Amino acid sequence: MRNGIPRHTLAGVADAKVTVHPFTTEDGLGLQLTRFRRTECEDVVLLVHGLTASSDLFIMPEHRNLATYLLDNGFGDVWTLDMRMSNRFPYNTEPHDYTLDDIALYDYPAALAELRRHIGERRVHVVAHCLGSMTFLMSLCAGTVQDVSSVVCNAVGLLMRVPVWSNWKVTYGRELIERVIGLPRLDPRFADAPPFSRGWVFSRLVSLAHPECGNPACHMVSFMWGTGWPALYSHDKLDPVTHERIADLLGPVGLDYHRHIRKIVRAGRAVKYDSGALRHAGLPDDYLAAAPGVDTPMLFLTGEHNHVFGDSNVLGYQKLVREAADPDRYELFVAPGYGYVDMIIGRDAHLEVFPHILDFLRRWAV
Image: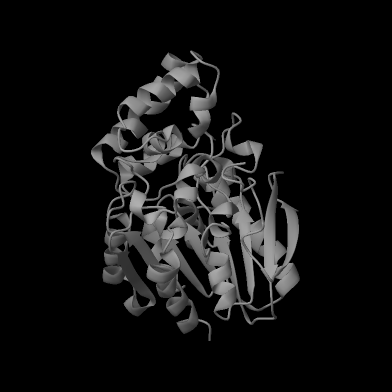
C-alpha cells in the first residue's frame, strides 16, 4: 500500500455497479474483464492497458480517472481488460514464449466474446494504451476481432519509432540483463530488494543516472521503457501520490516480449514475430500493410514529449491518411506538455486530454 491506496483497489470508481468477469483464452490463459456500470447504454467502452501496467491505470482514486470521466459523461457502461501483459497476472513475469501475435490472436477475441455475452450487439468502442494499442490494432488488421465502432490509440499504433538510447536497450539489453547481470526480469521495486542483491545493486546504478527525483521506482521505469529524466511522464503532470506509487501502476516484467519488440523496432512497424509459426499462420506478416483495409475509425493520441515512442503516432496517422480509402476516419491529437503515460494517469488529464477522447467517442456513437 502506497499513501494509503491499496494495490488493485476499485475505490476510484464511485456510484457504479462493479462486476468481475473471468474468461479463458483459446491457448489456456485465465484473464479478466471488470465492468463498471451505472446505466444501460447503447455505446460500451472497453479500456485496454499496455505492458507492465494493468486496468489500474484507468481507475486510480487520487485523481479523476478515465473510467469515472466516461461514466460521468454519458457512457454508462465501461469495461476494463486485464490481458496477459497485465501486472495482475504471473504471465507478465514468468518465463514464456508469448509474442504480441499471441495477444492479437487469443486475448482480444476471447475478451470481446465474453463482453458480448453480456452486452449483446451494442456498439463497442476501445480506448487502448501503449502495446495494448498496437496489439489491438494488430487484431483488427488480422480480422481476429470485428464489429468495433471506434478505437482510440495512445502513445503508439502500428508504426514504431524509439529514441536512439531506447533502440540500443531493445537491441542489446535483454541478453545483457539476463545473461551477464543475471536478472530474469526488471522490477521498479528493486530498490526494496535485500541490500547488495543483484536487483538492489542494479537499482542503485540506475538511480545514479537519474538525479531528477528521489524515487528509485521512477528511475527504474524510465530505464525500463524510455529515454529521459523522467522518460514516461513529466513530473509536473502527476499528482504526488501517483508519483509515489508508480511501482503499483507500472509493475515488474519479464524480458520475453522484448524479442518481438526488437523485431518491430528494427522493422519500424508491427510485423509478425515468426512467419513460420503454425499457430500464427492466419496473421499478416506486416500488420501495417493491412491497416488501410480496416474501416474502423481511429483517434491517435500522443504527448508532445513522448520519450518512449517519439512521434510514432504522428507518423502512423500520416501514413494511414495517405493510403486509406477514407482518410476522414483517422484523427490525431498531440497534447501540449504531456509525455507518454501521463496522457492517462496525469493529474489534469481529465481537463486536457480526456475531453478529446470523449468528443471522438461521441461522434462515432451513432
